[in-house]
Length: 400
Image 1 (cartoon, rainbow, N blue to C red):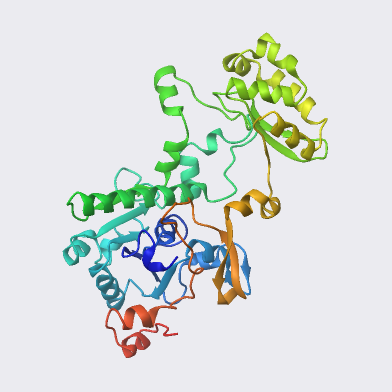
Image 2: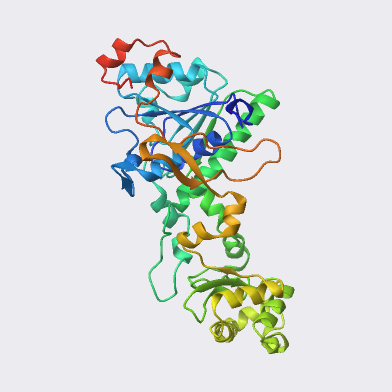
């Protein structure tokens, strides 16, 4: 599919953000065709270039999160940097930023300035604690949000410390929510006759919303969910179990029919007849005895045999996959969930997760991996915005 036929073709996004949450907002938009111009500091760029693993000094995660984007450089603390953003804002549909509240205003780039240049521009603002409230002035990022939102409190085992996730969970959920909310603002502007506006999103808020029934349970019953390993407080069984060949599977039996099929697949029809496990609420009351019985049955089987039996009985199960297993899995291959993406810095291509979702007519596409720092300075700053090469060279901006 060509860039012109992508569903968000013609939408221009100026990405002033760094690290993960803000750049993921523009990543999702770029996957479906938005032109994303990423503005990076001319000396260090987005510090995500130095996050995590690298190959030949090239940050690998940067390549994923900043795919489909153009990179230009500007120091927003300088008059030239401010002017670059102002010129970009003239034709922008969206500006994404994740600086602490007041920072854009300090630089002379607040929404009053941007909207005076372009009344239709949408400013998507991502911060740790939002633009308002008593904590709005505090520095914030995903790890803090995972604690503040209540995620860490319920994650882990009762007799052990709270656990943080092994990836940027709060940032990633904010990226998804931010892309959705930005599209809502675009829809209202373009289909309802509205203008530009400010979208204020705190990193803890999407994760807080996704944490389940905690608010309503506390409000109505005074309940506080505590750590319980992989168990859930509203269904049983739900856990991971070890097979005979030392592999792991995840099993859940929230629907009565699924629980019964699971027991038949494991040659334990007696569990269905046991009055302690007659329905979900009773199973929750006797979850330890139930899980012990299931573990005894699971460990009699190797992984392949267990999966075969569950398929035969149409029972629900999944292997607990490592990334190596995912690379070898035929379903991931059939769905195209991992694809090669062109990139000359990493030997011609790099494999990464494909776009999220499959459209029947207008699918998204990854055109290229994250760009070199300032790779598009000449194309954007000179050819489109009218800056001279001499201006950029004097300011130390690269012109590859």
